[in-house]
Amino acid sequence: RPQCPSLCGTVALSERVTSLGKDWHRPCLKCEKCSKTLSAGSHAEHDGKPYCNNPCYSALFGPKGFGRGGAESHTFTK
Image (cartoon, rainbow, N blue to C red; front, side):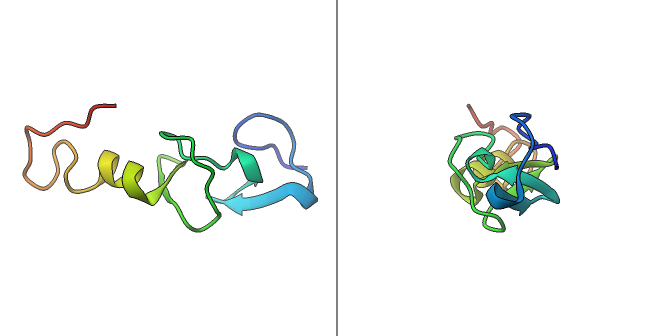
């Protein structure tokens, strides 16, 4: 059985959700920033980690983030 990427244990077929090319426990597929539970295919990915599309992914990696879109002085505070 595959190991859940959150390192909580192995994933049985009955409790598996596949996203980012890995098998997760359904409650373990959460936004890396806000911990909101995500659905497979309805979220964004950065460096192999899941993020909710809005607001987390947009705020962290979208065009208004540091060094993007010409807004060099703007920074995102966590």
